[in-house]
Image 1: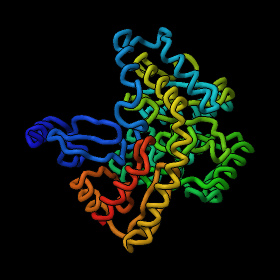
Image 2 (image 1 turned 90 degrees about the vertical axis):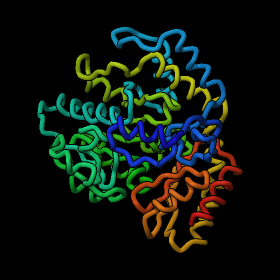
Image 3 (image 1 turned 30 degrees about the horizontal axis):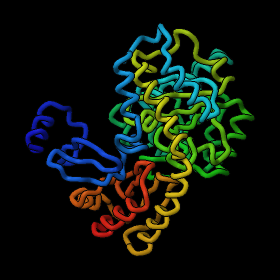
Length: 393
């Protein structure tokens, strides 16, 4: 049966993914099942989307209830779920204004537009520059791609939007060297994901924040993958004590429902985008709003952040033990339940073998094993993962 479905997919879908040869059908807890009933321990969570695993609490019932009321209405009108979601998102983030999108890439697009409009209103110039980080990844749309610091993603689609400079992550001197009187923003992932799982260092963020404040440059933090509790705080920057002017979020925000957002401080909101500057047909619809609202409730009701901090200690311990036992692994790096094992050689064979044995893993670059499990994993799931991974290594 799976071969037939795969053949149909290959005949109809544009081949932009080299997919593994399985067809996933359902999920339960932290496990996925394919069409033939094989069980997989999920340590990728849909690339960080299913933070609470599959069918957690009454999340499904919330979505079903909203379907019975209203799925969509245009942004010419208000709807209660989106307003409730915005209020809760403001509360957990400490930001002041919210714009809901359909994806992380769209959130980055909105952040870029906000920064440029903010600068335009100051001096009327249209040649402002943005500094992004080398090895970063912000999405596949043209604006998000323009600030993605990995050339292989950009080369075939040049020219990009222009006026983008790149600097070294965790190298404040490199960033400052790129600044000039046209610089309007610095954008970076608080924890780089696709680039190899590199957390921003506290001293680096503090220095960039200081210089941005001194020069009235906006700091944009991309929390699409590392946000929504993955590092033990709602957003990774909160543990570092460095607040951005603009922030992007998505992935786990809707627990599987496609939704993202960019948020900003009150000062940026009052002096940037205004009516007619930005919009989206589906962004902030009632269905997505209900998902975001209930996700935040579930985090609070079930003490998800506390659990992440507790289970992180155990996961890091077990991964460090793997580093000590296997010469092919150079180091572990990461934050919370966003971890990577950097290896001396490509890890594709390990991921394929793990899949055969019922463990879903992904990479972060060719030589880094990436661990993005649901935030609700327990010690027994870590042990199960390590046992399978040990066989594959």
